[in-house]
Each structure stands twice: as structure tokens, then as C-alpha cells.
Length: 252
Image 1 (cartoon, rainbow, N blue to C red):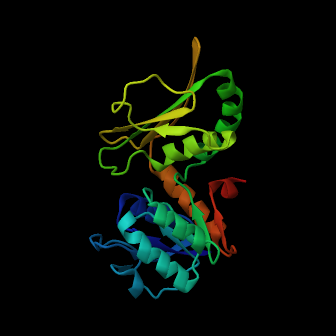
Image 2: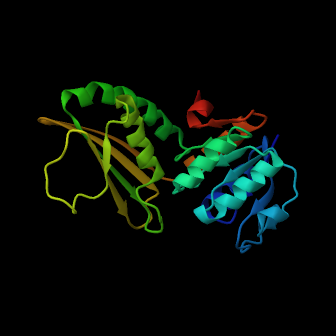
């Protein structure tokens, strides 16, 4: 049994994880943390201040906001609690703190918890090694619901990073081409964001060559894929020693 503290329990992802764990005999949520205790049907106590939570747990799952990350990291450090960190839009300062803290506790950080995206990350490394040297340009288009506040998505950046790492970080990321007038450079990855409606998540990686285009696309039809991945990550992280893990470690 993996005992979980759900950080951001009253958000959409927190509630989806709550419902998934209800049907999972190997996981249990012992407490929730949320700034707004607006849902009274949670089958666990909810704390509006994480420092007031005194429940014993094996791991914390975080689907909250950037504003709550500092207190979360302090809490996990103080209690030596492993952390599945799913919030996106973290600053460089946050990322540096996460890297430092991973030397003391186990942290699994992933911009996207789905199995499909993480398989795609691996595949892109192989595809790009063949196509980019042959002159194919790379563009990434990501689409999300109208309430998503960060852009580009963390997943889009992870897809770009997977390609860039294969070429010793030689690529520059271009998020907006309206500010200058020049032709496309050879070492650019364009990243475009679309926000609208209730789009759960759609990512296209476009390899555009001379007279041919290859598009690799991942579409999420439900947030359940991210929730299931987060629960699987929590089970994986239970009992793990210090280190910075990702979903590739979970899927093997």
C-alpha cells in the first residue's frame, strides 16, 4: 500500500486522482492540501495550510500552482518525503531548488505523466538523429484548454529538449516570429501555443524537409491518462533513495 498526500486535491487533476485511487487497492490518500477547501466530499481530511498536515505518508503527489511550490518543497525536505512533482511553469529558481533537494529526497519531475508522451520523447531522439542532419526543420505546435495559464506547455519544451539534447543543445527556441523579419535559421525549433475551449492536450512535432513533411502527434482525450501516470509514479517512488527521477524510470 502506498499512502499519498494529494497536494492540490481540489483541482481538476487532484479530484481525478482522488477518484482513481478510490478504485486502487494498492494506493490510499491520507490527506489533501488545497488553499480552498471547497469540496466537502473528499474521503480524507483537507488542510488549507500544508504545514498543519501531520499525517504519515509515503509520498506526495503535486498538481497545484507555482505559488504553492516553495512551501511544498520546504515541507517535503523537512519530513524527508518523496515527491511526484507535476506542476508546470516553474521558474529557474524553482528548478535549481528541485535539483538541490533531489540530493536529499526522491523527486520525480515530469512535464507530462502520460505513457504515450514519454514513449514519444524517446522516439524523437532517434527520429531527429536521422532527419535533422538531412536538413529537416523542426516545429512544435501545442494546444490546450483556454484556462491553461503557462505557455508554451512544459510538454512542448520537453519535446524540444529531447531533440536539442541529441545535438549538444545547438538549437535556439523561437516562440514568436512577429518581432523580426528574417528567414528561418538552420538551428531553430519553433514552438507555437494554441489556447481554446476544452482541449485537454495536443502536441504536434513537425519535421519539414524539402518536398516532404513528417508530423508526429500525440492527443490526450482525457486527463485520466495524467492521473493514472501520477499514481503509478507515486507507487514507483515509495521507498526510493534520493535522486531526480522521471517517467522514463517508471515505464522502464
